[in-house]
Length: 112
Image (cartoon, rainbow, N blue to C red; front, side, top):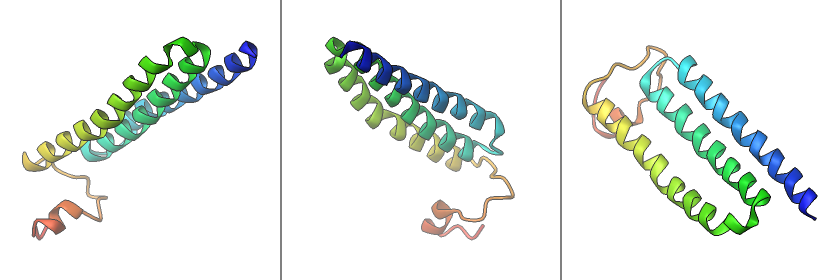
């Protein structure tokens, strides 16, 4: 039974680290700060949760602590990226010319 849990845990760990690597790649490849924030937040949230789940399968005695860490991450990671994006918008950081839809500007009556 422990071997099966180790295999599942290993698959989850590899999946999590893959998402974390892709998130790092997204930080390098995206054209502006708003796209970088989105790529980094989504990939790191999923990657970290998968990594925590993998550790939970490999060490079931840590499950409660890992669950609390995962819940904390689910609440704080999207919130922090939202705050970063709002502050970048308010400070006037330029968007890439490829940006076609600006929901924040539409909601706040910005014609640009």
